Image 1 (cartoon, rainbow, N blue to C red):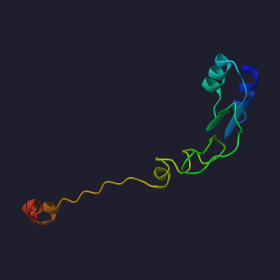
Image 2 (cartoon, rainbow, N blue to C red):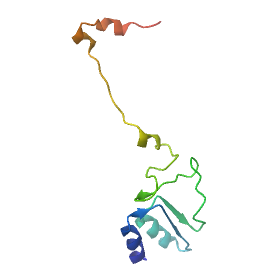
Image 3 (cartoon, one colour):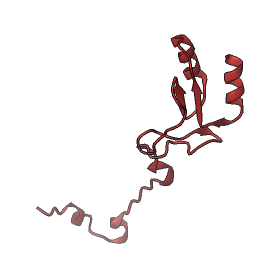
Image 4 (spheres, rainbow, N blue to C red):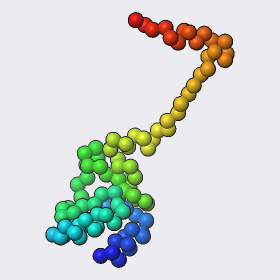
Length: 101
């Protein structure tokens, strides 16, 4: 089993993996070692629904951070912080403290 898992992991691809077993220790061993985006145990290996079932892969497969998942948008954005020292250009910093109450 370890040889098979090592061979799979060495391919660089890791979209999905499926296995059938009644032995919990075997399932735990597979899940702890296999490097894939989705691991199906004792079920069909199809049926991922974007936005419901996190779908993506690892390495050379899939979309990486799970298409449709809560962190998916972060793949397309870059966080930028912009500061503006208005006092340095002669602005009145007290104006920033005026509330609209």
